Amino acid sequence: AIACNSATSALLAACEAADVGMDTKVLTTPMTMSATSAAPMFMGADLQYGDVEDETFSFTGPFHRDRDTRAHVVANLFGHPAYLTEGRSICDRFDWVMIEDNAQSPFAMCDGKYAGTIGHIGCWSLNIHKPIQCGEGGICTTNDDELAARMRAFINHGEHVSDRIGLNLRMPEVCAAIALVQLRRGKEIIGGRVAQAEAIIAAIGDIPGLRPPVVRDGCTHVYYTIPFLVEKNRAEFCD
Image (cartoon, rainbow, N blue to C red):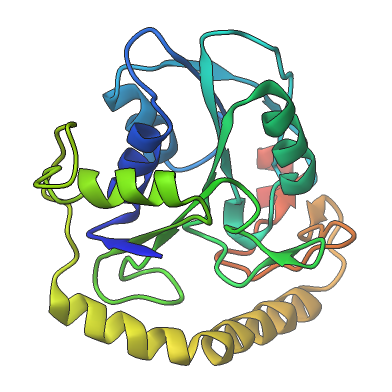
C-alpha cells in the first residue's frame, strides 16, 4: 500500500508503472469520474472506450487483443464492483496491466475478495467526500514488487532509486495520521453507510419507472451513492 496525495495521483502512478505512454492504448469505461480517463490521457495514451451494461453500469467490452495495448483501467462505480474476476482473466491472457479505480468502493466485495485487490493495481481515494477520508489523499495497492517500486519512485521524483523521472505526489504526514485512524474505523463507517442506503431504498419502495440499485450475485454494494435508474422519460418521471 503506497500513499500519495490523491486518487488521481494514484492513477497516474499506476499508469506510469504499467508503461502507459505515447502511442500506447488503454482500454477504459466512458462512465466514471473524469480522472479515470484523464490519468492515462496525461501520460499520452490513446483511450479505447467500450460499452457499459445498464444494471450496475460496469464496463462490458469489447476486448480486443492489440500489441500496443498496455492496460485496462476499470472503475468500480457508485460502490459496486465491476466485472473484476473476468477482467483480470482477460488482462492476464492478453498480458495487460489491470488497474482498478476503486475510489468509490472501499470494502466492496467481489467473488470473496475486496474490490481494489483483484487487478494488478488498485487505486483508492481519501478525498473529503469519500466514506474513508483524510481531507485529500490516495493509495495504490499491489502485490507485485516491481510495480510497487515503480510507483514509489514516481510519487517521489524518482530520486535515488530509479532512472525514470517522477513527480512530487507524496501524502503529507498529517493526512496519513488521519487516514490510519479512519481505516481502523473503516468497516464501522461503511456499515453505517450501507444501513442508511438500504433504509432509504426500502422507504422509497416501489415507484413505477424508478429502478433501485442492482447488486450482482457474489458482490456487495457499499453505496458511495445510491444509483437509482429512471426507466421512463425524464419529464414523465418528474410529473
